[in-house]
Length: 446
Image 1: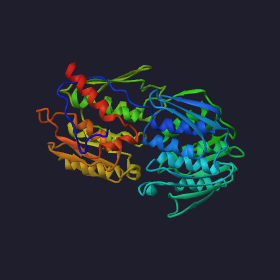
Image 2 (image 1 turned 30 degrees about the vertical axis):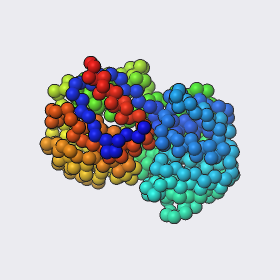
Image 3 (image 1 turned 135 degrees about the vertical axis):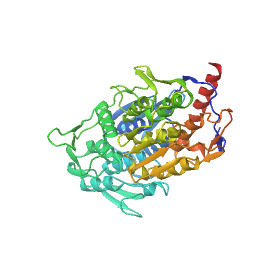
Image 4 (image 1 turned 60 degrees about the vertical axis):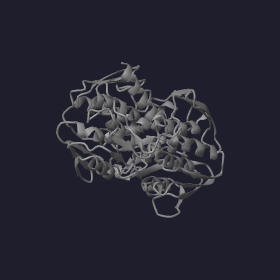
């Protein structure tokens, strides 16, 4: 059932107690789907994410002729790979607003031995950067036409494989472009040497390299040339069953919750140690700085905080884990002093302009906000009640401000903040508000 719109957030009146089961990582699920399609044989993804974004990826792969079995109840996906062949030689793909799907599928189609493929998305997706990826694929021999504006969707690809060899890519606007190229380059006729023209955010690239290795491929950094990667040409191998980690960005909201309402919340299965392959687990370190006690191990992570102890506002660069900056920004009104967040210029070209949107909504709530091209500074002021937070169709706005709304700043237990278009959470976390409410109910029994 779709949540009420706008959705009033009922505050916690007692400290949080309980578990928040978050879905599988979107980033891992979509990478594993692509790599599974490139394998020779069947790969099964356990703990996979079922959401709008992964649904778009699954539907596109099916349109390309791949057989995918799905079992949402048990959280598994199975995909029959074709050893580098794309079964359908003609397809039209709609990626909606899914940036990972757009970039990964463009690389896959360009690497196909033959075929004609068109890829389009929403008007907003048509404004998200693709140029660096498209130019690098062309260098490797791809025939790609931009049908409206150069460097953006919609595009038409007339594929005849990639030749491999040396290529340079500008993936500074989105590391997904480099990840897409790294995964698809294995299909080239010879090894590829991929050099960066500008630095990228490393954590998601490191994730991609680890997944490529798990699926039997090789994409390694060149020790003699920083910023260069060597991709070995050749087929991927199915790992059999591949376990998808819980989504670290989705977990960030629940790990932050004790800072707002007190108590403790456990996220089963989330690794925040050296075994984790998601860069957004670095957000746990930010939470520690502002007063949360974060513990973790193989079975999961737990956050706890004394309700009466809001922390000192931090100054942090979120360049390497920027999806979580909204979580900190949304709870900044509760911290002592000015919260300064930098390294976020690239988030202006994601689902929405996240910097401008966050500044606008915090001001709506009465906060003092200074916005820079690459930064935002938030100085707490008395919160305004009765406000409806606009989400701009961006799931991360909805989830971040919902955590703030769980606080009870007026001490009466009544909703003081509402979320517009809460259904946008279906992009990555369809059950978010159900999990949040289950924690509130558990707190009343604790």
